[in-house]
Length: 367
Image 1 (tube, rainbow, N blue to C red):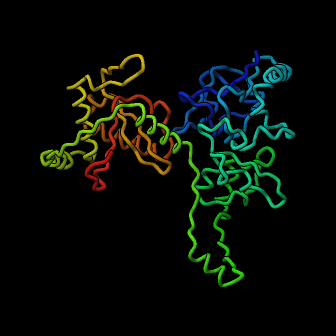
Image 2: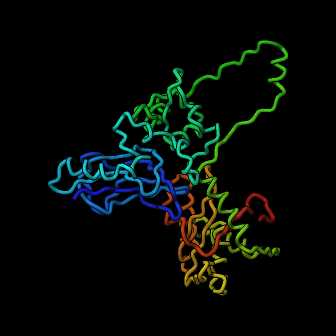
């Protein structure tokens, strides 16, 4: 039987997800559990495993498209079925599929329009303000140039002017491969034109007027701001500060590193010490929920990692059972994947405590 695949809620509370890359094409055979696409949430890339099997009949959204949760994204045909079954299924799904209609149908502009055309996508879509409006990516003949959200983000980070890129996606949409080919060709390294001025007064205004660069908010930045605001406004806070003499700890670290193949950091020791403290005081190893507190039997600690896009907090599971060297390797491995944008969603969820350390920057105390 033909199956309509819809955009899943790969992250709790998400209303819109970026489908960054398809791993299958029309005509491919799909089995249950096959990874058919990569999805981008606010903070992670998620592999989407199919829960149905069949042959790919139609892919309804392009790579890089921002799609509402629940919207149709693909049709699978069952064994022995022909296109009629897929077309019948597509006809029944037409009303729900309007925001992400089949990209192959050229007359329909909605499927590949930038996220700014859909105000309801505010939770994780690019802002609707002028800095990221489509008008900034229009050609000389005033025709709109469609650009996927992930391409706009990468281009902004790399300093690439999108209007210079020829799109090869549906309706001329600039997709990720276009940007990568453009950068690889060296065409992105263009000289900056020298400004001209009609008068000395205009030159003086230019020299002394204030200037700034607009950096649109990413989905991750929005999530960080929202969650910190929610934490500050909905959770009671109190602060306790104490100075600790850690000469013996530093000597222990020095002694360990003289023989250990893995170099132990002060941060590794802090994480391990927190786990020991939570095992000693299990009443603190809890997470608040509206109905009840969840009291954990093991210690899962989130460790703050700074990235170019913002702060991520991957979770180390069962810290109380780990040796320092094992803990150090796990933290380093997760931090590396966090900076490379390769964390899975489940690696960012859970945890009963978080460690954020700025001591290496000379900071005595921070909130």
